[in-house]
Length: 226
Image (cartoon, rainbow, N blue to C red; front, side, top):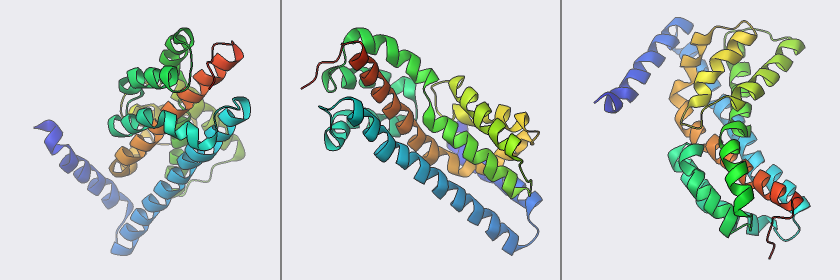
């Protein structure tokens, strides 16, 4: 019953936050407009990692894997990551994908992937950095260059310590907010859009794990190339 009522509770929480931040319908519209801009910005960044950065990296070091072949091989893990929002839940499929499709040896995959599921979270670190800057702008807080660098560093470290479970990055964002003196309660404003964004950033994390394990296998001579 609690899970079924969760969307209603989140809506009430959002309504309370919006009521404190806005006094007129125009101001409410601006808040939702800001949420839309934040979501689009984050999605563009995550899609860049998935469809541009990772394919370029792996095709540069492993000549036998081109752009199209890479996505064909890792798509089962990506689809499961998108549906579960959990790197840990996707781990068995990720291991199967890198071993059977990418040619990574079991020795490398069994060592690299469990570590990567917790440590290698590029999508989470990007999400935290963008979200904190967005929340600061929503509350009219001007961040200095030093604060922005602190956000990037803290977001990277916080993502390393995040659990490989759904929305873990949202909890660790409290650390990032506090590192630059911002109010942790501000995260309530991004609750409504967090779930779909969490699904996409998990795809980024899992895709990064497959790339890293392949590169490690290549460097150790443990990669079976076509």
